[in-house]
Image 1 (cartoon, one colour):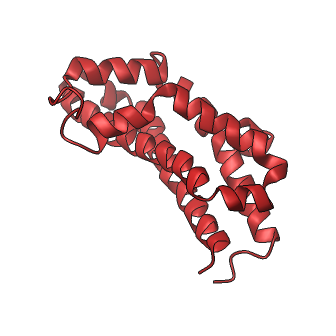
Image 2 (tube, helix red, strand yellow):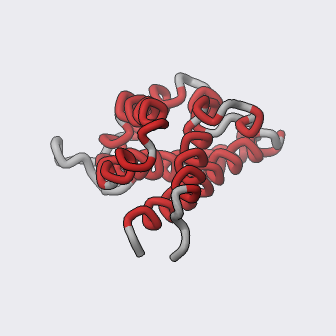
Amino acid sequence: MDRKDEVIKILAGLVSDLGTPISVLRDYESMTAFKDPIKASFRLGVYRLCINSIVINLNKYVELWRKYSDIKRTFLSAHDSAINLYISKINNLGVAGFRNDYAAHVQNNKIKKILTDEDVMAFVQNLTDGDAENLFSWIYPKNYLQLDRKDSLMGVVMLAKDTLLKHGGGKN
């Protein structure tokens, strides 16, 4: 498989890997029973599962363009500013540190201890600005199919994938 086809496969995976946890949280949040205090532990688990998945996949997006910068440069130069906008947005949120300190490892390697629940909640508060929809709205807005593709991360991922397919990718 050539590098262009690898990028197409990664982008196709990101579509579902970013969209699914956001859809799960939106679906659960629309259920009154999910907000019942009796379900607090379950609700926390669902949020941790989905936020961890989102964090890991936001990092994957950044890593993709770092490792495949040649494909971006050669085939996606017309979309470079849109791709880079989301790389900057993700980097500014500090998701790489959260992945390294919590989502993918058992402890923060710098301080050699686990993050407390307060540390995790502070990160999630910063990530979402107190409302998960603030995060979701630029990654996977509810109406993303009606928006310009460059107005959301999901749209940029689809735009990059479709552009590579037009350049003869996806044959493997």
